[in-house]
Image: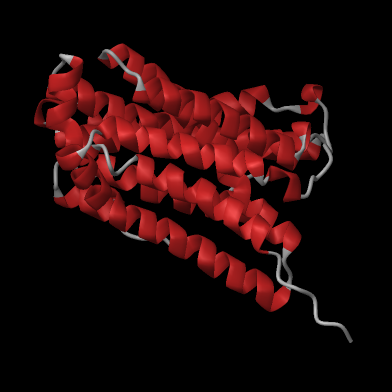
Length: 296
């Protein structure tokens, strides 16, 4: 029996994608003062831009996973990488806060939501012990990115520029495209008409309200509306679950759920790691409990 050679290309691409997505939320937090000075804005505006990145990913997370079934896994991932690359380039060249918001929070957030299901490449490429090993490396890379993010941000801010960080991310995106030919494609399984627009709207609104409520815990003046947001979010997600059951009873394709989709669970873990720092900037006990690790 010939021993199959381990395929490093797929794992490397998935790990690089995870690395830039996770580190993106961390390295700018130590550069807030510099961003305020360079972009001629305020601390509150920069904090809002940082929070918007996490909100964008939260709202588009399930849609990003579902688009794999419409466009194909590889094509969705590469579309996300392209959007992410354009966003990080705009962010690196930002002249003001709106430009940073558009490039980083919106474009990079959208691109990250499409790239997050990269773990599906691991599931489709490796089997048995190889799959366990690959997932271990993939998760370790995400943890390393969360750890070195503030250190990298401090180093770049002190000795170079925060713009260099976005430039390095653009270089990594180029590397991803250079080796993307080694990724395996999963053909589309549904059409655009089968895409659950109502389910997407309910899930996006639910995640938006929950994450926005958690982020507002850092602002004492906004605590009055936090219970409303945090309460309304799960209510919308409950309606989302009921809507998904209705679609399944009628033989329609539902959006992927965290309970039934392995790649969605791993995407949730990655997004949670990347958004944790934004949620806990106020160092409140509620924020810290929000950021406790969850099992994948």
